[in-house]
Length: 610
Image (tube, rainbow, N blue to C red; front, side):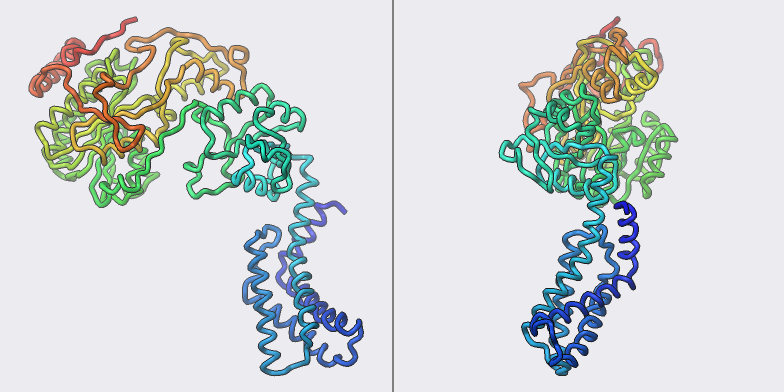
C-alpha cells in the first residue's frame, strides 16, 4: 500500500470524532490493564472486580474530559507543539479528576504503582496515537519530495527554520534540501533535520552539487546590496530565486510559504528603504479634517492610506481624474471624494470655506518632463498657480498645516516641470509670510518605484513585447525611492515642520538607468543584449544626466531622523508675491509668453535643448 493510501485512510480516521473517542477508550482500557498486570505479574485474579470497574470508569472519564475540552475538534494532521501541550494538560486533568472521584467515593482499590503505570501507559498510547498522524503525513511528504522542487534556504536563522518546517509539513511545490548561512559556526550543523551546507561564498558550488532548483532568501534584515550579490551569483545558474519579505513588510512577523514572493527590482537596487517610526509623529492627524489633493495618483493615494490608519475625523480626496478617485473611494470606504481642478480659484475657495480642512497634503501636479516641455502653460497653471491657490486657501481658511510634494528636479531646474515645481516652492515661502499661523512645508525627493510616472512600467511593457528596451543615455542616473517611504517622509514633515521648511531625504546613491534596465530584463527571465536588446534613444528636452538634491549643501541642517535634512525655502531672487501673481496671470492669458515668464520667475532655470 502506498503512503498516499495510508495517509487517506488515517486522515479519515483522525477526522471522525466518534472513531477517535472509541480508540481513546480502548487505549485507556489497555492502560488500566497494564497497570494491574505489570504490578501483579500479568495476573490480576485478586483485584479482578476492582480492575473491571476501573477499566470502565477511567476510560469513560478520560474520553468525557477529552470531548469537553475540545480534543476531538483538533486536526491532528496539522497539529503543532501547542496542540500536544494542551493534550498533556487535559490528560493530567482527567487523571487528577479520576483520583479525586475514586478517593471520595472509594469505587475501587487502585494501588499507587498500578496508577502510575496506567497513567504513563495511557499518556504514551493516546499521545502516540495523535503523533502518529503527523508521522504518516511526514512520510507521505518525504515520498512526494521527488516530484517537488529541491529548495535551498539562504539564512539558517529563526525565519529560515520556521520556513523550512512549514515547507516540510505543507503540500507545496517546494521541498527544502538544506540551508546556506554566512555564520561559519553553523556550517555542517543540522536545523529542523536539514543540513547547513556552507556559506554564500560557496553558493554556486552548493547549487550545482545538490541539484538545487529553487533558492529562497530567508533573511528579512538582509541588505539590498547582499540581495543583489546573491542574485548575480544565481542568475547564470538558471535557478528560480524567491524571497521572504522584510519584517517591515511582514506586518505581524509571520513567516510562512504564503509570504514568499519573486524577487522584485526594489530588492536589488542596493539601497535600503528609510524606515520612519510614525507612531508619535502621526498624532497631529488624529481627529483632524484632512484634505489630500492629487489623491488619485500614486503618491496621493498612499498618503490617503497612511492617513486613514491614524483616526482623522474626515478625509477629503481631491482629484481631476474621476476614474482614479472612483477607484480610491471604492478601495477605502469612508472617504469624501471631490472632483475639481486645484487651479480653479473659485472652486477651491468655495471648497475650503465649506470643509475647512485643518491639514492639507498637496500632491496634485504635472510630473512628466517631456510632456511639460511642450505644454509650459499647463505646467505653470497646475504646478505653480494650483499650489498658490491651495496655499492661499489654506491660510485664508485657517488650516493648521500644508505639506507640498516637490521634486529633486526643482534643484537647478533644466526642465519646465522642474522649474514650475521650484516656483511652487517659492510660492509657499510667500504664503508663509502672508499667513504665519499656517505652517507651510515642502518635501523634496526623487523618483518613486511603482508610480504611474515611473520608468519601470515602460520597461516592463517593452520587455513583454519582446524589446527593445529604450534608455535615453547609457550614463543616465536617477535617485529612487519606494512609495511607502516617500509618503512616510511627507507625513513626518508635517510633524517636524514649524513653517517655511524644505525637507529632503538622504536617498543614498543614484541608480544608473541602464543597469536598472539590464536587471529588470534578467528578473523577467531574459538575457540583456541577447534575448532583449537595449537601445539608446537620446536625452530628451529638459532632461539631465543626473539630479541634485540641494542648492547649497552647507545650508542644510539635520533633523531628529539621521536620513532627513531640512533647510529654509529660499527665494533665490527678489521677486515679491505680487510679482509672481502678476506674472502667472500674464502667462496664462498669453500662452506663447509662458516660457519666458517662467525663466524670469526662476532665474536658476537653465533649459537643456536637444
